[in-house]
Image 1: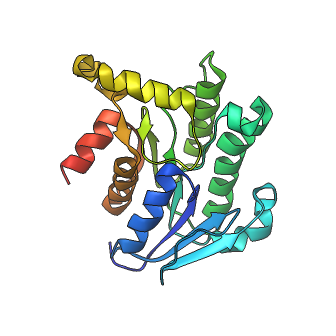
Image 2: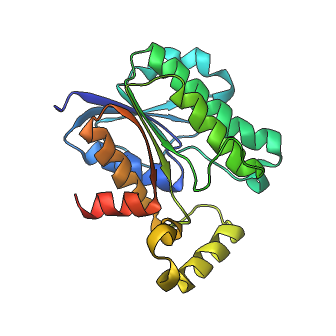
Length: 223
């Protein structure tokens, strides 16, 4: 890979997305990083292009999605979104529509922050929507599609998520027992997930893959 690679990111204001913007800009592999955002980021860099957009009218900014690698760290909770319908719009409709439009502009790789337990057949609405998003993007047949399924994400959030905070505390108390097939439930740093996404992009490996927390952790530690 040379340093003419270009990146498009959505979800840049989130926990993983914030780290990802910094890491992409710092990477010698990328010459341009375009962030589609609702509001301007409190960060600047010569490589960074911020496009303030309305996610309900993505077709209007299709021409700005001309990047080779797409990174989606967009996500919310039903409580924050206000309804299941609003949640589905953020976690399914926007990621999938960006995937479709960016592909038309020549995108080759797509990297998605999903969630542990994502499954389109799940009885749990949250997990089902996450799984449906994975399946819809995989069906587009990007040359490379990697879904990252982190467990509880640790880091400094702009918004408080009580459920996740309690889950993190519980998972840390039980971490000694989370071994073997249960290692994927261990808490993982958002910065580590972002680093794993960048490493996978730089690998430029053809195919579809799902990486859970333990594999992401091992990928980053082995780099």
